[in-house]
Amino acid sequence: MLSIEKLNEISSQVRRDIVRMVSMAGSGHPGGSLGSTDVLVSLFFSEMKHDPKNWRRDGRGNDIFFLSAGHMSPLFYSVLARSGYFPVNELGSFRKLGSRLQGHPSVEKGLNGVHIASGSLGQGLSVACGAALAKKRASDENSVFVLIGDGESQEGQIWEAAMFGAQHKIDNLIAMTDMNGQQIDGPLKSVMDLGDLDAKWNAFGWDTFTVDGHDKEKIIKAIRRAKELKGNGRPKMLLMRTVMGKGVDFMEGTHHWHGKAPDKAQTERALAQLKETLGDF
Image 1 (cartoon, one colour):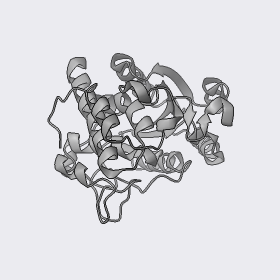
Image 2 (cartoon, rainbow, N blue to C red):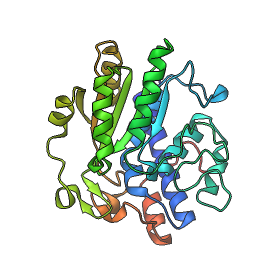
Image 3 (spheres, rainbow, N blue to C red):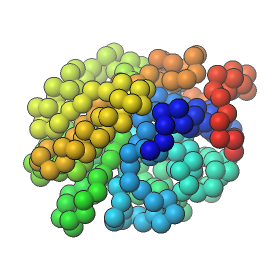
């Protein structure tokens, strides 16, 4: 396991990647990507069983990760590249015509690490339920992870999947919700308040954990606890409390940076706050 210090260094570089990718493309979604960085870095670099050099789209013999909130693709691509799924310099092709790194993850051109096309909000949890159920029926002891958004949780399909997961006792599924309280139109409480998500997921028959999504020790502890509970007949939901735009002061805590690229001056200001630790692409 990497040290927390090393994981923090990776997070800093991933955040730099996100800012640079969105800036170079002139479009993209930096806010949620920056906010969920610590969650995905903890998962990919510490807790998930995966083999970038021998990746299979069917996920057999390894853990599987699905990004349901596909607009957070800059984060996903950076973590995949920094994990060794494809060359880091390919990050510079983000959102370019013909690139494998489209605005939402795509499988058309065969990008290692991407199991499904995603971005139609609400669908990823259903896919994760199916994949996890398939692993159980194939006696594959590995886990399935999925990241959804709190704004995405306004979609009815999320709650259909919640019922399905509990009905079929899919206890090898570990879902995570990015709870930053923001969506593209404004704060969740102003658009459509979700109420008590912990109580709701519990009522749907899931084990739930509310976690500081920027404290890697707590993130890792929660993931490990969720894995320990495999076999109890209940799927798991980790409610990650995050700050949209985390790491860049003028982006933090506001929906205005949900889907907006920084200009040149803003990019320079953002990068000045993020230490280059692994080398820029």
